[in-house]
Image (cartoon, rainbow, N blue to C red; front, side):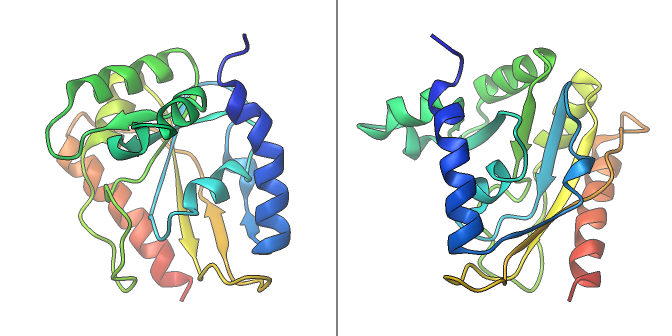
Length: 192
């Protein structure tokens, strides 16, 4: 059985859905490496964000997703799509291990460093340290992205922009986390 079979089957359908229903604009998708380990990290505005990101590249993306999505009838669906369940109520070491394993297997990992959907829209919430921690432990580049606009049916309103990949230059997680947050914050402010 092929790895992440559901993801591979669903991705073209999701791309068509996002293109025609939301008329998404994908900017600078060439910044996503064609192969090798990498972390995509950006702001989180809506439940549709993972679908938007999936439609941006042909590569399979491993997403961190809240554990509530991995229960009951949804569990096989999300597990066969390659998502990594996250228990947001605790510091879950299994998330770290599975994320590092994915990156060491040269996979593409997507993290929303805010940890949840940001409903404030006017500012980004403080970033959790997972992105920079996993990047440091696996020497993975980070491709920051920003999502702007609103998901409105048949309106060309939603955009995702992928910024240039970069690697951490220090092992100071606090400094690197602030750097990532500032890159995304400044790009969001410039897009207004």
